[in-house]
Image 1 (cartoon, rainbow, N blue to C red):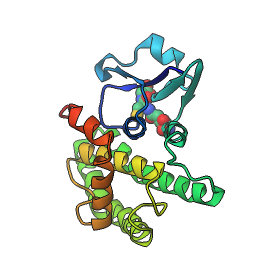
Image 2 (cartoon, rainbow, N blue to C red):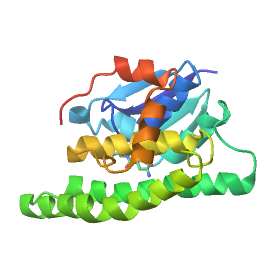
Image 3 (tube, helix red, strand yellow):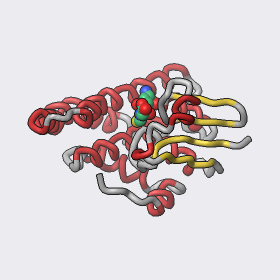
Image 4 (cartoon, helix red, strand yellow):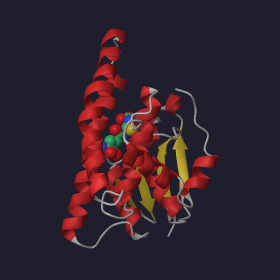
Length: 204
Ligand SMILES: N[C@@H](CCC(=O)N[C@@H](CS)C(=O)NCC(=O)O)C(=O)O
């Protein structure tokens, strides 16, 4: 069945973990990308169920919400545990990293340069410390992966860290050895490594 992922041309963002998982699983998919500067493309936006990207299509079915898509495509690569408790633990992981990323989203939206700098400072000195000390502890207690072994949550986590680094212009994980190791491990996975080598990062 034909698979298509629709997102912006930006290589860093909510669709990047999905792209990683699809490349890791060696899935053929059409990577449909829209230029930010062309957005909103009325015909596309109007066709989206909630007006936003990413959107995933498989045959005549379609799915929105980045986390739902990432988890779904991960099933095919045995990256989702069967045990309901283990699944819930990983769901919590991805919501936790998204909770951190909300602060980055607020920073991106802020137009006032003084307030923007203040938000950046708060992220780097308060939110990173708060969230990352906890992520680090989880990884340390679980063999370096959130679920004890590689799972879809690790891909989402790494993709979101990359997005935060890109938008903030900082390496937010630099003081956290377990997080750094996870980022490197995921980025070096077969399929992901080649994809990363082939992508072009546009400057902000
Ligand atoms: N909760 C949604 C958020 C989707 C979202 O915020 N998409 C943004 C890009 S990252 C978007 O489509 N923005 C353009 C618009 O709203 O027109 C998800 O995780 O997929």
